Length: 640
Image (cartoon, rainbow, N blue to C red; front, side):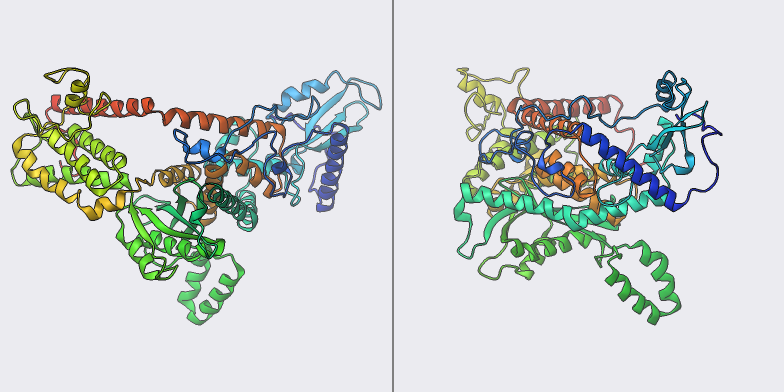
């Protein structure tokens, strides 16, 4: 909170542009003089404004270790190892950026002597006429002799233009955490400082967008592709064809900025399977604000003038509409764009890991981007295939229920939600573990089915995995030396199905063990990386609020940079938009990378996975018990 301005020291009236320019020049000169007195030590190369260099080895050193190394999380593979070398600091005179209460700061000047009259009558005031959003203009004035001891802005300008750096950083920080203008104003309201005008915020967003489009997006993707090539040259040079094109398998998926199938904005991305790096992405928009507010009324008045206006509008580069068609068709359109330009950066995506959407793969087949000699092949996402079992079993319960055939409920051997979840888990394990041949995979899937229809009188556990680590309680006890195994407390949840239920379930297993389906699961790949990327993007651009193409493009590029390289990409963006980087930013970014790696390493441990699986099943059992105790579901959408 700022103190009241002094009437003696502040002239009322409009401040001229010349005066503002003079003040900013004076402030910049004083800051440069201060920096010369207290030079900072060297900082990483990525902190140099406007540079596209990689981080210095003393702070962040990616290691080109084999990404196929076992038991290593995806985050550790991509981010490498962060060294423990101390991060360079600027010494005691290199002050960090902080939020201050000017009432407290004003008290620091009270005992100081005026350089002119030598009286302790200095007063700190704020000139509201010269304020620039979050940046205040401070003036230290002697109330005795009315001399101005010192004055200047609380921020320096960016290295790109005359915009205040703090304003640019706050807008960029808001975009990085999913906060637009309204949320930034709520922040200012709670803290108790003047805010930023909507037009000013839009101006900063526009400049950030231009920097992202012109330099940052290319920097992010070029870095990923260079790392991809380096990996294959070192670990799998056979993937590089005689024509100098790198043949890789990628997981592909799309997402939309709005839930449902009416979104105006969506995007698609490809992630290389072995390294986990995002190699390319494409943001699509079927909406343009200028077209809607200016072009549409003009089209209704005069179609000929509208066509001429539209041509100029497109040529100006301000139109954000780059897609024609339905929202559901964005994923297919994104795939065609990405595959169509892959040869430009010497990559051939000849294997696509995707979900059950056949339209995208059919469109790529018809496009034939690499010719008949290099057809695009499809590999199924293991998780989506296993979800088909879950969906089919739930639909079976619903369909038979309408026919007055009850296979769910509380009778022994009925098909419950907990059993469906457990059967899906067994199916997923079978597909992921036994991926050397289709026959072996099919046998492992059927083992779970026969395990479920086994009884004490007719045990059918011969196909279940053997050993003390088996998910089958029968085989586990045999491995432990028990001659006559029996179920006991602590064993995995029972999946027993009576003969009636088993008869209805068997056709589903027959359909999901077809050789053509399992043959597309031998790679054992998933779209988990794509789903993870989606969560990062929509955290920066929440789906519950409408955001335009530019916001989504910024959020997607930021998310891809963080996904591939961690905090380094954030500092590179700050340099691209003209913001200086201090040692605190570097230190906090490296700390965030360490924490990310630690969380990922813990999450991928077998013990942690088993703990999550048990917790999930326990929650499902408790929920089922509560629903049963209440006499059935208390709420069904559209059912009451």
